[in-house]
Length: 105
Ligand code: I3P
Image 1: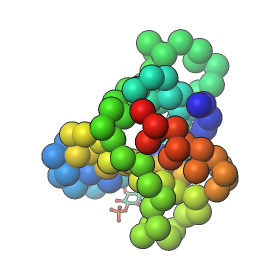
Image 2 (image 1 turned 90 degrees about the vertical axis):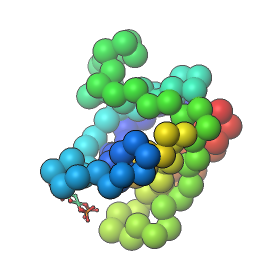
Image 3 (image 1 turned 180 degrees about the vertical axis):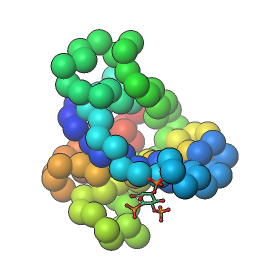
Image 4 (image 1 turned 135 degrees about the vertical axis):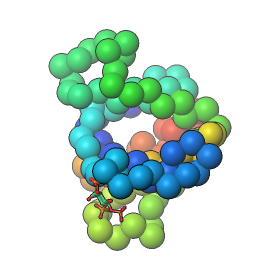
């Protein structure tokens, strides 16, 4: 699973609220490989090692972010270490595809 996603950090480790100044939406080229979500600046970066950010989705939960109404097709990702991210997909179909793939891991 690969594609562009916009991400907003909502909570950091242990569920602490992500501070002001670090909560804005950022675009990434995302690749899910195994239990790891690699977030890259752009799709020309082919190798995962140069990823800007690496998020483990082992024991993570993805679900549609129904409470977040400012943008369409947004899903929420809660990690095992209680970080929370919101991800905006390009379509509802892509949103459900990401949710399904993340929860399969
Ligand atoms: C955040 C940025 C986000 C906004 C967030 C702000 O500011 O404007 O777009 O979320 O609001 O804190 P910063 O860039 O300084 O981190 P929304 O797009 O969801 O409004 P929030 O603190 O209410 O989450």
